[in-house]
Amino acid sequence: MEILKKYFPFSFVEKKDVVALIINIVIQLVIGLVIGWVISLCGGIPVIKWIVGLVGGLVDLYFLVGIVLSCLDYFKVLK
Image (tube, rainbow, N blue to C red; front, top):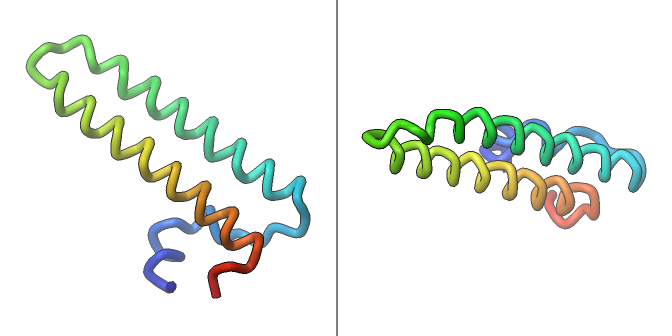
């Protein structure tokens, strides 16, 4: 569990109510969208297009896992 808290620190922030959970999820979505948009700007270079696609996919996966962990932490599924 400590490893998850180390790599996903924003997901384990104390959330007092459902509004705080929703704000946490929205912040993670917005950050993911902004990073994805910045990464997509580099997608026009044909030589590194597949690398950019891979990095963008990994960023999306990171934030998806972060959102799931945030929900699981709020509902006290994780100890």
